[in-house]
Amino acid sequence: MEGQIKQLGKDLETFPQPEDPHDKFVTKMSIFLVQAKEQFKELSTIHKSMENLYRDVMEYYAIDLKKISVEEFLTDLSNFKTMFTEAAKDNMRRKEMEEKQRRARIAQEKAEKEKLERQQKKKHLLDIKTEKDETGVMDSLLEALQSGAAFRDRRKRAPRFKNEPQNFSSTSTAPV
Image 1 (cartoon, one colour):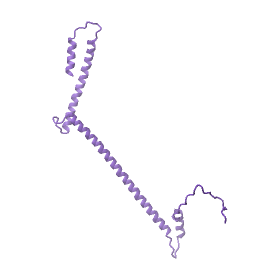
Image 2 (cartoon, one colour):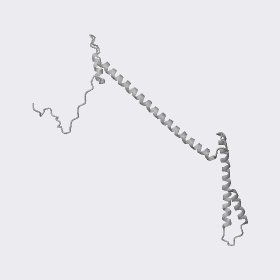
Image 3 (spheres, one colour):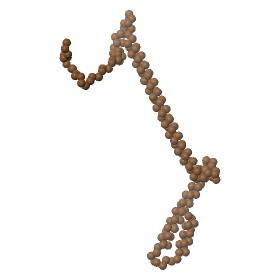
């Protein structure tokens, strides 16, 4: 690219005077040449910086520049990044699953403990001593009534069918 820019400069210097006064080839190309030189200078500076950084990276990873090409190195680096990201996601999923299982186990243990405590409390409240000394019987009964432990589990009613008439009156219509 540098050679082409120099060649353009030489061509513009040796370009014959145009016969047409409206021919602006030399002026337009001169402007282009100035811009191209500036852009080339920037690109060459960036390219040198990139080469230095690449050399430093290869030295950091202890890789021989002669044995591994830039493309191969960048492909390996990209593959590593992809695999590392997947491994990090897998680790996160595994930790979340372990945490979820731990919370479920704690909740189950807590529910079992509460159930056992309710059963023991119910048993304790229902065990009324019938010995000669009957003090505290009323207190125990009152506590059992307040906690609901005195009530046995009732069966649920069978659901009524929609076609059955409902009888709300106190007198029945059935023959006696």
